[in-house]
Image 1: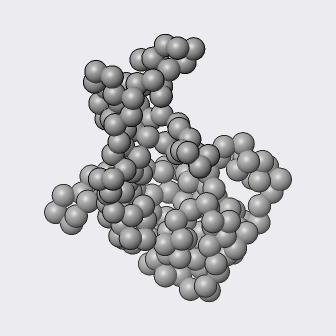
Image 2: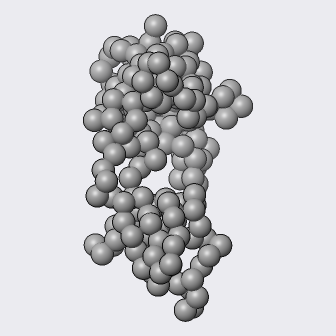
Image 3: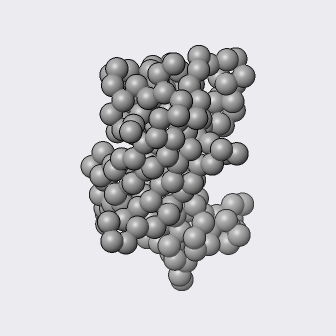
Length: 178
């Protein structure tokens, strides 16, 4: 069976970021903890899905996704200094949650949910970075397809309960596989 729309897919991979001469391992999906998703549902990067479309179990893949097809370029305008009062709970600044390195869930003025990375807490302000953690990064994937099947009720339940998810068109070719 080949990867196509509405197939349940599991892959193992290494994700390295950076340029050819200086790559850093950012993420690893293993046989014990693979990335599993429903292909064609739009929950994965379209460029990632494009590379896997048409692959089958045992196919190995190696491909690169540039920032323009991933999480965009790093944008300095997404760095903001917000007053500490924004992070108060019952009138008290939440120092346990809002500390350097933590990700804090927030809502913008239009009601959109977004995550911000706390860069620095100083005086009366908090410096937050709203860029995706992989913004500006070139993504280098290498791995293998370990499962492709029609989704079961259990598979679908795992996706709706916080499991991994994915999606794209079935182009009928195995673009990223070797």
